Image (tube, rainbow, N blue to C red):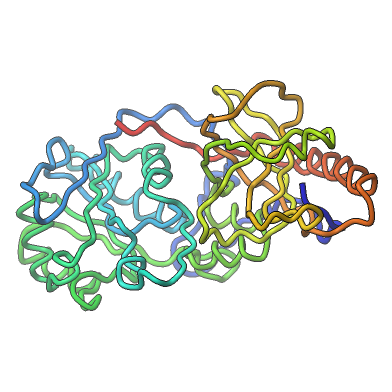
Length: 363
């Protein structure tokens, strides 16, 4: 585990921002829990321009279209619009999203901090009321389509959409030359509806994937959760480490995250699901300067857990920031600080209720 002094209040933000644009849920405070009823069956279809059309049960759906990086609250406003419109038309609702991320395709050498990889994104989408998702391969052929060609070849010929919901800043087609207004105009000509969803604001700022990345890069896990609508989480397989934590009395499950993960290095209060049970914990993300091996790991100590997790895949929700990494004068000082970390983490987790991302099953 890493080391250092606590640097800020751990209380999770619970305010609801309001302002022009889409208002936040007016029925009550934002829920960060996963206690909602289980979603219905969710179908994921992978498609590409060089493959035969195979939308199957999602053909004729009312689509929510976007990258949905992080599936944050602004995205969920677009999704909710698509679901509502689909129900009124008695047709399926689905997300149309793109992989790899267009930024990764156009700039393959640049680091990209993905809030959600494809698997995580689909699990989050599956926990909404959508019937499914079409994951369109973003390649040279798709990138070269003019906006009119994208509408004809993808939306009409391949998917036969009933309509689409998009964000106000939606762009598509070659050089991002297509706009939401253009899509709506073309929808009127081709017989499908287009709903343009305005920006969602929180305390006057626009909710965006970039704002979430910035919050996580600064260690502001509570702010990221407020923007996302759930605690940001990572998924990884438990690997063997140097057993240093066990020697110190804090055995850890070690996960190697994506090298481009932009989460600030430091110690966090976390919550982890194991076999359907959730365990509170404290985790260090970084290089452990006291025993630096040059490898960046997420090392998770689960409170009140006993068992072997090697080789298991875990979902770890990042609930609250505790402190940065730090080098101590002695191992005894480190152990004392780790005990304090556990105490502070438990306080933060108690304040968070049962906060955990709601994740669905992808069929």
